[in-house]
Image (cartoon, rainbow, N blue to C red; front, top):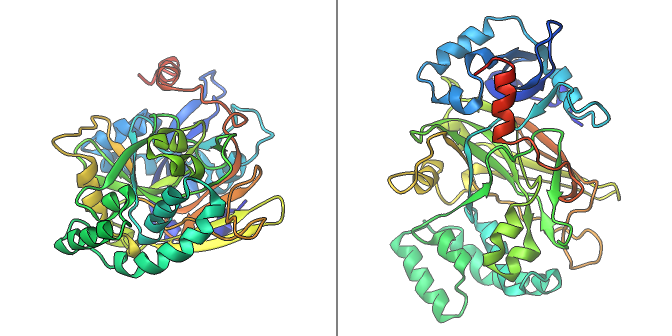
Length: 393
């Protein structure tokens, strides 16, 4: 587990919004999900300025309220909060980080990087069989990779390439959303269901071929204004989706299959969309079997700009009155062999997954199967009742 020393100077220059479970106080007030602001190694309780992240970011004066929160006494150190969040032996009411969003709709964009787009085509043609994928990968990557990586989605050039690929029987539904005029936008998970830093992520117990999907996640209000970004793991089942795109819901939405965190870095004079477009995301996997993997990708390689993705997700046909978050897609589809040669990568229970960037910190989760990970029981009604009991509504 990375400690505070793992975080870079770039991280400490930011102001972050998040959520944490804070225990009750000595006066008898109960504990529960609380809005926090993090600056440097100091954690401030911002709950009195907005009981939910969604409500706080909808306020026109939220930046003034940020200043007011930062003028209060710190609640904890970020170092202590990180350590407590990963202490699985502790009581469930302990202080710990939660996913930093609550009532926002959790959306995701797919097939936004050329490399992962090709892997989707390979999955489809292999019908979810990793043994077949190796042979197809060698053939199809050579024939498509160079052309597709340089294509602007929705352009006349993209339409011409589509015509050629159809003639060569190489067209795919994934290429349609990868280089076509419309981006793939789907609902990743129900509101309140995302897990945060230190919690387990879930893989469907029947899946034999799966992987993490490290992504930059945009955080927008109901007016589609991007106010900040965080990291996410759009856990994916390659075998399920490869058998049929109609199994996307089964491949993407299972218990604990969506991780977001550790915090939302808010935009300010030093950090905005231009910096987001340059973020490098690192993926590290450490298995209990001794397997390790380390890769990195850059947002500079994305095929659709982040503003374009927001426009595809929201507009006259889609409204999100409580705001929304948008996974921007991943470059990663790990192919490093883990066991038998040619079978590529798949998760094993106990894998430690770290998704990090210099600007956003690290999202660390351990892998379990979805039926063994902690069940999702604290939903909208539970949060409202908790806030009512704490006299925050």
